[in-house]
Length: 515
Image 1: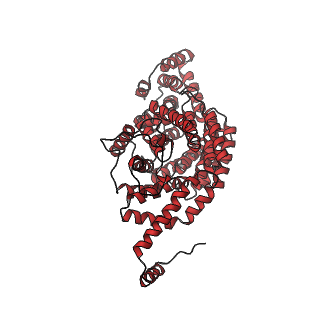
Image 2: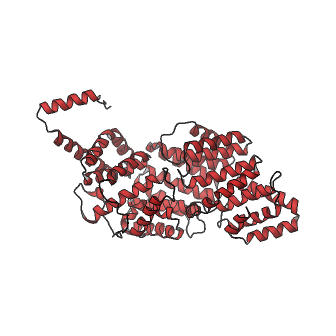
Image 3: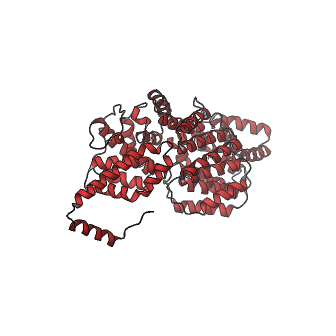
């Protein structure tokens, strides 16, 4: 148990130190060095069997660690500040302390220059890490430390109010991509591995594939076990959404899980299981996916990673919905949305959208719209990048459920630029096709514009433009069946088949133009 000192007691202690002839500056310096070393030597222990024990100790000492950080920044001791930020970065990530990460990286960044501002210097291979030794630092290790600091800033900023096309963000992204190349040893490890954020924001799918493949290969070649497991888990997540790429998401997730289990890393086990669950979801194996999510939650609970637990429960609720366990899914989501969340992750917006879907499917349209309204009020447009596209899709789908087909079509028109954005196409390549399906429902439904021929063409375009091996979720299957039934009834089989075939030959731009 720690006793927190009142300010008056702190002042009294400072006076006694002065009376005793103590050097306050030297005492503060010793304090900084002591807690810097605690953080630095704790960092590697956060990746393995001592993960929970180490995280608990850092939590107990956290106010002392913040005091050390404040002193390093105030005295403009860049080496000490860099060491502390690098040493605490993974702790912040494990506990989703994005605000802390953002605050301290911004403060430390002000002590130096931004290495990603043109003209940039391409990074050389760096095998050592800043936290391998105490300050002072020099050479390429120091240069890489500054680069990595700004990558953490980018990762933290990506979930704030900066839109993905903000000029400042795009300039930083361009600088990162000009600096690094796939397969560098430092990009296998945190925090330099965060350059993947820049690759994703840039929207270059080919580069993303080269990066994740090279990261796996380099980590395996260099014998970086933890980094290999992390890279495999990341690639599994990406492959789950990109069935058109060569690779097997489940195989990568299985290998990642095996390595993380050998290392005793609970966080890693939870993430590997989550990746495998997602790959199973994409194949329609919802019962198996739910089982993986439950096991992942158990690992995260053992670690005490409350933010990770919440994210995993939201993902599991989506799987339960598809597995016919809608009541259980609604219970989970209602509990999460009714709780004040202290975390900065994507759990709450995803929970509200999943809950809106359940409410909409069960005829509670007003309650569903309330979830969307609250989500809009809580998170500014652009706050969660790709979530905006999902939100627009959910809103248009709800409008159709509510018979407001003109509103649905207008919403789809408004979303056209967003769902064709390179980042959206990279993260969720099926989304443009599902917007076409929603428009088709609007076209052929009673109360809609009754453009059955165009609706049938959009159905053909939807099927043709879906990524290979895409398994539609239940709402997609239901919408397609409804739209096909109404279009066939209005057109007759011959005209319907002709329109459907015509739609199958359209590009996304041509199909979107019909809307």
